[in-house]
Image (cartoon, rainbow, N blue to C red; front, top):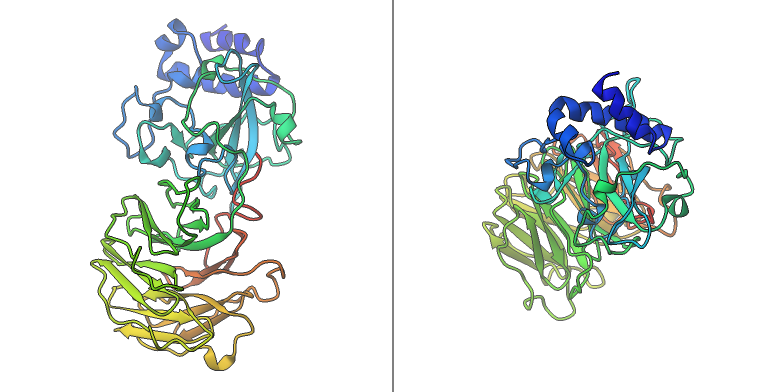
Amino acid sequence: MSITDGIGEFLFSRTSRRGFLAKATVTATALSVAPVDLLVRPGSAYAQICECAPGYACGCSDLCCDGFTQFCCTINNGVNACPPGTFAGGWWKADGSIYCAGPRYYVDCMGECHGCGCGGGAFCPDCDGLYCECAIGNCGNRHVGCTEFRYGQCHQEIGCSGRIACRMVSCTPPWELDATCTTASATDDSTADHFAPCQAGPTSYSATCAGMARSSNGAGYWLVDTKGGVHTFGNSLYRGSEAGYALPGAIVGIAATPNNAGYWIAVADGGVYTFGSAGFHGSARGRVPAGAQVVGIAATPSGNGYWLVVNDGGVFTFGDAPFYGSARGRVPTGSSVVGMAALPDGRGYWLAVADGGVFSFGQAPFWGSARASHPPSPIVGMAPFQDGRGYWLAVSDGGVYSFGYAPFFGSARGRVPATLKVIGIASRPQGDGYWLPANNGGLYTFGAAPFYGSGAPNFASSL
C-alpha cells in the first residue's frame, strides 16, 4: 500500500465517502508538492500546498498561499453568505473552535457556469464569472476564485460548477440553512479557528441596485447598490465597499478605472468613495445646490479624473476631467437630468434627461433625442457607442432608443415585471451589445453582451 493509500484510509475513517474521495485527491496533490511536511506535521492536506494566486508576489507564510479560500464576508460587503452568482456546493465541519459552542461549519460557495459546460468533467473555470486572486488584492487575505474542488453535499442537482468563490462560516448546521445540503459529514479541525474580521456579520442582505459599470474589455461588470454594496461579475475585481457604514445619502452610481483594479462610487450629496487603484480627486459634497442631487459619475480615459452630474444639469469636474459646459438652467420644468456618458477619448460628454432629451458638450456630437417620441416611462440612463458615433438611451420600463450608428439589439420592454424597473444601461466597448440592470439587481443582456451573473432577486441570499 502506498503512502497515499494509507493516508486515504485514515481520512476515510473520519469522513463521508464523498469527503473521502475529495480529500484523497487533495492529499495526493499535497504529497506531490510537500510530502515531508504532510507526514511530519499534523493538519489538513490543503494547508501543505503553497500555491499563491497568479500575479502576486506573496510568500508561503502569507494567507493567500495556504490553500484555503477566503471567507465570503470579505468580498460580499460584510455579509456572511454566498455572493450573487454562486451557490452552496458542499461543506465540512471543524470541532473545538473558539467561535462556536459545538462544531463550526464551512460552506463552499461555488461559481455558477454561464455559457459553457464542463466538457465531461466537473468544473467550468472558463465561464464561472470568477477571477483567481488574493481577496481584495491583498496577500494577507486567502485566495478567492482559484480552487477547483467540491465536497458535494449541497445542490447535488447541479453537476457542473465553477471554482470556489469563497467560504461561508456558521455555527448552525448547513442542512438547517439550506434544505439541499445533506448531513453527510467531512471534518477538518485545522480550520477551526480561521478568522476574518467580518465573520460575525449579517447572513442576508437586501438593497436596491443603483448603477453599473463594465470592465474595460467588456468581460465583466460591477453592480453597486444604494447602501454602498459592490457586487462583481466576470473579470471585475472586488476592492471593497461602503456596505455597513452610515452614509450621508444614497449611492447613485459607479465608475471603474481603465485597469479594472479599482472604482469610484458616487453619493447623492456629492461625496465620492474610492477603492483599489481609483484615486481620490475631490468631491462635490457641500457644493450641490439645495434640493438637487448627484445622479451619476463618469471616469476619464486615463483614470485620473471623473465627472459628477447633478439632476439640475450641473456638472462637477475633478482630476484631469475637463469642463465642457452644463445644462443647468436649460432642463425643462418638471424633468431632470438622469445620467451622463463621456466620449471614449474624454473630449466631450452627453447628459440624458428623463423626458428623452439629450445635451451634448465638447466634441460629443448630437445624434438625436427621444423627446419627440414621448417615452412611456422616464429615461434612466445612457451609454456611448464605440468612438462616440452614437448612443443608447434606456427607459425604466426596459425600452431602448438608439441614435447615430449605435445598433438596436433589442429591449426588455414587456419583460420587466410591474414591480421592478430598469435603472440604467452599460454598453460593450466593442459596440456590439449592452446590458440593462434592474433595481432588484437583475440584468438583461442584448447583442454580444455576456451574462456573468446578477444580484436578483436580492444582492445576497441567506446562504
